Image (tube, rainbow, N blue to C red; front, side, top):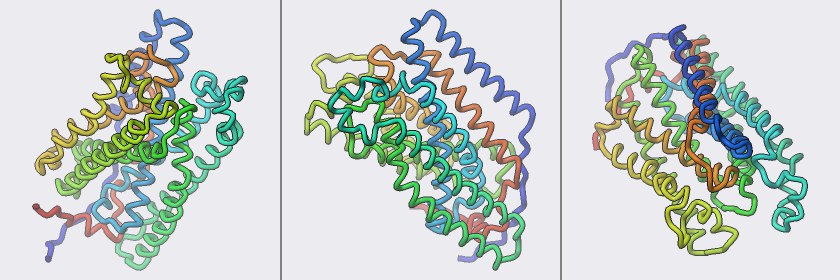
Length: 414
């Protein structure tokens, strides 16, 4: 099929002072909510809630930043062209990864006693924890995390550096192809490293919050959260940029494909969710099933603290995205997309809350101002870093060899 010529113009995002003020105001609101929530709270409960909320916000934003790098890496490896015109968005998101990694390490170094049971002095008197001591020890935890975060940072820096070179190569097809293949090689190395290291990160930072419990597909479950939330966050940034007059070559076909990603990986998340649940349910082994009984599921007593949120998880992260994105028009309607994005991101906040709170705060863990405020406190720096990164360089990679393909991208009508 022949396409008419589409002019591709360079764009430069301006991080307006008004937008910065709004972000600082939002940060202030988040801090205020934390302070209000802390007033009147018992000291023991307050300490646990604060650390658990800090971990929730830090890990969530870490997943989004790392997910941006994974999105770019997979796009290069699969020769994807449909995402080329907005690839600077996930590139900007991944610039927050070093910050998120440092924050996570600080959280562990200063708050591990409130989060990780296995770090206590008498923990190894427990035979189960003693059997896991080769893996669950402070030296291995910190050492492996530092190595993994540095490896991610290395690949992110390399990918970003080569990507920015494309801005200088418009019209130079030979040089552009050379840069593209260099990015593919870097992406190949990154995805291999990510594939072997991310499961360890999921086990260490999240599964070891309840060290007596284990799941063989826990890392895939964390990956499902990361991927669907990353695609959703990319879509939200792109919709916002589009509303401000940027990304002029991005059209409803590109949002349609982002919507398909959100739809598909909401289904994939559900597959992981139900698989983990059923594998443990029919085995009915006490050390495995305690993960679900502590969340009020599978017990004789109904109406536990987390039971409503547990089943709400399935509705918000599966049923609603399924119903919304089944429609072709919904994936092409900006307002519907924004609503769906908000539902998915809030739904997986609830998902991460259920992964963290029962094992750290316990059965009395509430959803209150502290949890909401702390999430805002962590999301504001993530958003600020992403927008600041977008403003530093050109928004459109006009020298990318697939830029023309992006401009002519169409989604066939089923």
